[in-house]
Length: 143
Ligand code: FES
Image 1 (cartoon, rainbow, N blue to C red):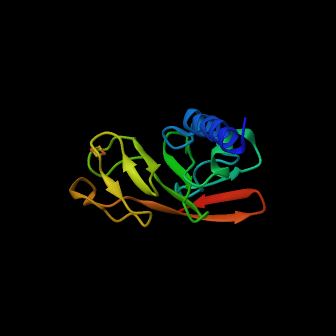
Image 2: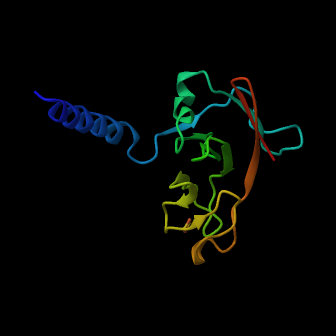
């Protein structure tokens, strides 16, 4: 086997592994946060421990987790953490996820920028975005 044959085999294997593990955005659904999801005033405010296996999807750009079926927390392509409501503004379906560095609703295809602004007619009403704050391995998500 020459070098090119080896690289072709390794490359194909790596591509298969990535496809098999990350197809659909490297998501883990319905992670319980490491703190209550809401602050005393009812606003979203919780913390995820990024060192736990349940949050491993957040180690990779493009990965995301869904917290209590209410909030999507993802890692953008620039390595920053982003968060948004899971509930779409088109219809109140909880099908928003991170895809191609934007928020995407799988129900009918609404698209939103990471800042929550609609990117197509279905997303015209925008999306509620949450702030994130990383301290060590602890990622706080809050309104
Ligand atoms: S409910 Fe999200 S696009 Fe229609």
